[in-house]
Amino acid sequence: MLQIKYNSNFKDAYYNEIANSKAFKFNGLTFEEYYNKYFKSKLHYSLKDILCGNFEKLTEIKNFHGIKYKKDNSVKGLFNYDKVNSQKVKVLISKLQPKISKFVEENIEVHTCYFCNIDFINKFKNSKSETKNAFTLDHFLDKATYPFLALSLYNLVPSCSTCNSKVKRTNELKGLSPTSEKFNFDEKVKFKTFMNNKNLHVEKSEDFELLLKEDFSNDYDNYIKVLELDNRYKYHKDKVIEMINKRRDYPDSRIKELSKITKKTEEEVKQDLFGIYLKEDLHKQPLSKLIKDISEELDLI
Ligand SMILES: [Zn+2]
Image (cartoon, rainbow, N blue to C red; front, side, top):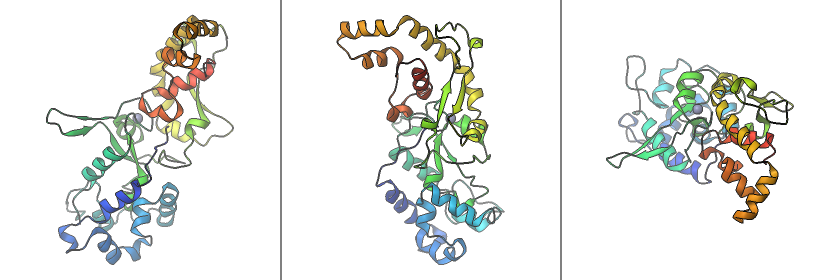
């Protein structure tokens, strides 16, 4: 639902972290050297493209190989996100998931789930001063089907466990990922209440609809459906009722008055009253996209 913002040196730092990893079974080689020696001819693309290619590049690699390596245990053994040695898969390097998780924790802003914006997924320090996090990393393109993309940076979406393990699971989302520069869900899709009277006589959640609607296309229909967003947001209709009630109590004339009294701008007064977040800060608070879209509907912004 919200696009992930990356720092410019993020890619190189990630690449160095993984490509320079060593493992007992690499016989003194680094991950990169081992890949170039034994896997490059098979997987065709450079390790840099696979690990740090942008989402469009990953889609190209996915389409190039298709599901050819779904059952390839050697590819699974090298691009080892969370596997332990088993009869089936002999891992070449121990699971990289803890390392990747730590890297994401230190380099991406993780406040709320990038898929749903419903739950906090922040990091915190426990009583032993160890950093812990409340996020899971979802593989946008399923790692069981495309094992060569299991460690790809732009295939990883910091998300809540409801999105990752309860609704999306291994379902493939069609279209763009929040990791893509072209991901524009926020601009194209809006929460709408379809309130049919301008007097804001809405008292209970049965009085109105709350649905995500896309303008002029349906690129994100599958995303909304797979992540059950409309159904999950029904629970948050109370937030909308609270905003509608407040809007009734604070028409524009009242906001103007408050602005004079408090010497704040009208925007600041609205911000204080309704908790509206700016576009670039949306990921910082749960439900901030909902609040912004409803604010638009209520002519607050
Ligand atoms: Zn979520």
